[in-house]
Length: 301
Image (tube, rainbow, N blue to C red; front, side, top):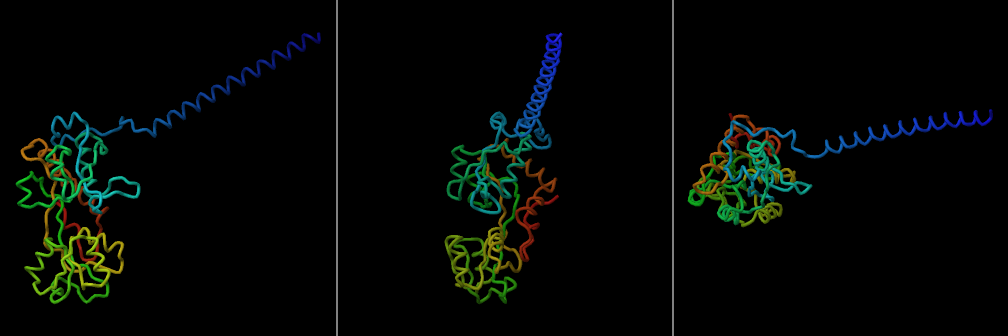
């Protein structure tokens, strides 16, 4: 009888253990499934990528087949093209290119950014290292002989920067004053023609020009509106005054006689204009600074 009771008790105990094991295994399986789902959610599988825009012409067949744009951009020219604190490309022009990739491939990240500067950007284009240039490229008659320009998507001008306690409040006030300019710039030419009595200190580089201004070598600096807007953000005892003048349109640069690429680029820029996307970017990257109105610098619907 004792053996029977023991056997019966043992059977019940083994049954309970077996059931516990099954429940534990089922729980582990569910946890594993949930973990797998969470892991997959964190991966970029592109299953939810948007479809390419049917409102924008497709890029050239070779680019479409490659599956990404390869674009020459600036990495040292905030807020148009620069590297953020994480070393990633950022800025107004970068966002424009990402939008173009979204139109072309349904994926804003389908872009390879190639760092360029003012010296090598056109040679990179000519040697097919990049598809087009999006690197603070001003439209000039000389460059029109080297490449094809897109429609304008940004108009940069020159502005006046002074200390906040300065008596200078407009461009005519620069008459008889000492003004820092960049040698060969449109700002320098503008002062030659419109405020000839301004005493220009012509400096080669932006860094040296900013240093000269902070050292008190001049009453004002007259230079590119975009760069000066960035300058006053970090140098808070300076401000932008007066009007923005000497506008110089900026565009994207495409190799000569590449009609398909030019059609794609222009179509994408026109779609952005219709969507008022440039306004969104200006509000993010170039907010109001002094008397400067960034909305005057972009195409609007």
